[in-house]
Length: 221
Image (cartoon, rainbow, N blue to C red; front, side, top):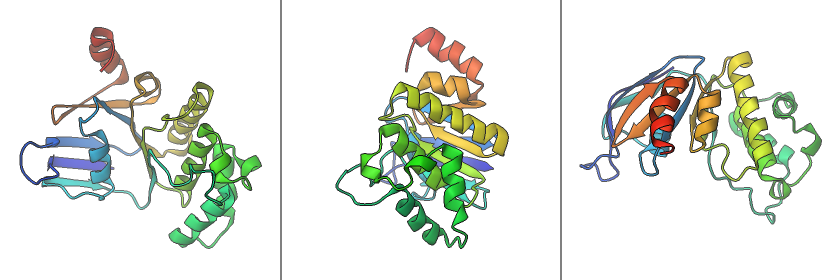
């Protein structure tokens, strides 16, 4: 699904590189959490997958007909922005050129937000806002779902709901998920694989191995 070979990136085009000679393969159906310290290149790698950035060296490609993306920050957090959940999704439907309006109801049903579809985005709780953005990303039935720190600004109960939803989408719908994570316990509990970035290099392992090698010995990173 995703393959990177000799991938390197620097915003200046020269050393030092944020990412340096990265090799990574993510198979269809995986749920991979990208972890590492602040500044390790997690969000940069996400932007390279999305082609928001171009590699300085090497290559990275995602073999998916449609990619859904949930950014860390959104444009609807201000309560003065007058757009409802339904209007936000309908606008995105037009952008994707999806003719059938039923895709809105289907996406809302998947995330359990049918009851707030006519509510202003700016008045939603943090958890509801994140679910609305996941609903938007799910429109058009993406094969790959990318998320940048999905639990940021979300209360504990809503975090459990969101990670339960992501796990269900991965296990039952077969959607490949790649998530930049600072929530290490959620990464270990829900992912099929962990990709740890440090010093420009990446290391992939099972959640169990990651918990033992990094969380067990270092406590946190």
